[in-house]
Length: 258
Length: 325
Image (cartoon, rainbow over all chains, first blue to last red; front, side, top):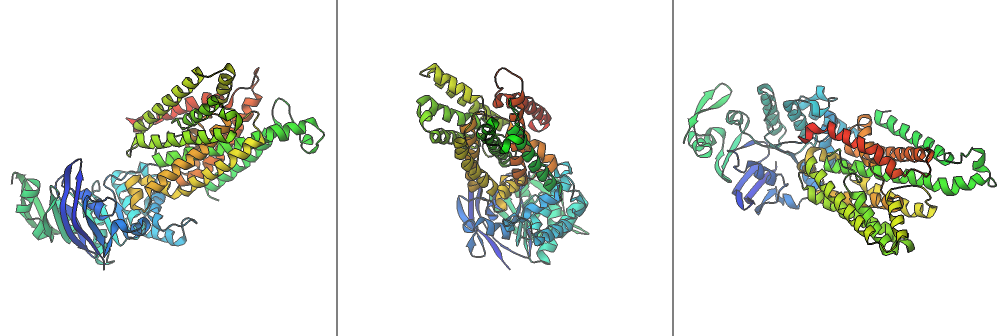
C-alpha cells in the first residue's frame, strides 16, 4: 500500500494560476480519473504528481517522501508516466520503444534477461505483442497509444500516471485499456491516475473521480457522486443527465447551459 | 550476429582496408616492400607523412561522425551536425582569432583550446536558441545564425589581418585538410577526441530515452541538465579538437548517421559507435580520393566534402519537407 498525496499544489503559468490549491490523497489499489474542461489544470497537476514539474507552492509526497527530493532514477522506478501528446522521434521498432520503459533499471551492460521478460509481459498485457517488429512511426494513432501504454508497463511501476491515454483508441481498445488499468489497481495493487475527457468511460473504469475547473477541485468521490448534473453544469457549462446503463452510469450531455 | 553487429564488423573491416590504402596511396605509390625497408625513401613518406594523416583521418572521422549522431539524438533532428549547424564554424572562429593574434604560431594548444571554447559556445547557443521545443525550423535558423556570426567574425579577422601571410594561412586552414599534419598534432588531438567520444557514449541511454521527448525522458529518470552539459562538452571536445587540427570538414556528422540508420536501427544510443566508425571510413575514403584526384594542387578535403555534402543535405531536406511543413 502506498500513498501519493498532493498538498495545496499551486502552479502559475504566464502569471495566470493554472492549478490553484489542490489537495488530494490518492491510494494505491484504486483507479483515479481526473476530469475537467480544457485548461482546468489536469495535465499540470498530473505532471506535479509525477514529480516532473515543480509546483509554485505546495508539495507532492509519495508515502512520506517529497517526490522532488527523490533521486530521478528511484522516482522513475516507482512512478511511470505517459505524457499527453507522446512524441516518438525516431522510426524504431515497437519492441525497442517498449524497452525504453526499462531505462531506470538498465546498468552499463544493457538489457538483461529480466528486462526482456518485463518487456514481453508489458507488450502482452497491452495487447501489442504482434506489433513488436513494426516501425512505430507507421502505426496508427491508437496502436501507438497502446505501444506507449506497454512502454510505461515495462517499467513495472508502483504508480502509473497517464495523461489522456485513451484518446485515439477505438471503443474496443478503450475498454481493454480500461480493464488493464483496473486489473493493475485491483489485482496488482498499483495506483493508477488518468486524465480523461470521456465522462461515461471515466465512470466505467475509475473508482474515484476528481473533477477540476479553473485549477480547483470541484468534486472528488466515487463516479456516481462526482459526476452529478450539478457538477457537470459547473465544470463544463452543460446540462447533463445520468442514465443507468448496463456497464455503469452513462452521462448524456443534453445541451449547453448550466 | 544481429544486423547491427554485422554492420559494425563490416565498417571495422572497411576502416582497416582503407587505412592500408591510405598508407600506400598518393602521388608516390608505396608497395608493401617499402613498409619494412628503412632504407627505402618511401619508408619516410609512409611513416612520417601518411601515418599521421591516416590516424588523423580515423580520429577526426570518428569525432565528427559520433558528434553528429549525438547531436541528432539529443535534438531529435536528423539535420543536426556540427558542420551544418555552425559548431565547426564557431570552432574555426575561435582558432582564427588565435592565429590572427599570433598566439597560434607559438602554441598549438592555444588554437585547440580556442577552437573548443568556440565549439562549446556554439552548442550552448544552439540549444538555447532552439529552445525546448527544438522544432526543425528553429533549429536550422539557429544554425544559420551561428554560421553567419562565425562567418562575419572570420571575415573581420581576415580584413584586419596584419599581413598577407596571415591571411593566406587562415584561408588555407579554413578549407579543411589532413595534408602535412605531424604526429605532434595527432598526439594533441586524439586524447581530446577520445575523451569527447567517451563522454558522448555516456549519454547513450539518455539519448535513447529522448526518443519519447524531453518529458518522456525525464519521467524515465534521465537527468536532462547533466545530459545537456555532457553533450555540449562532448561535442566541444570532439568537434573543437578536430577543427583545431584539420580546419572545417563538414557534413560527415550529417551523412554518416543518416546512411547507417536503416542498417543499425534508429535508436540514437545504438547509433553512436557505428557512426564513429562510419565517420572514419568516410573521411579516410574522401582523403584518399582527394589525394588521387588529378589536379595541379591537392583538392582540399573540406572543399571536397562540402561539394559532396551540399547536395546530400539538400536531398535530405527535401525528403523531410513533410515533417517541416
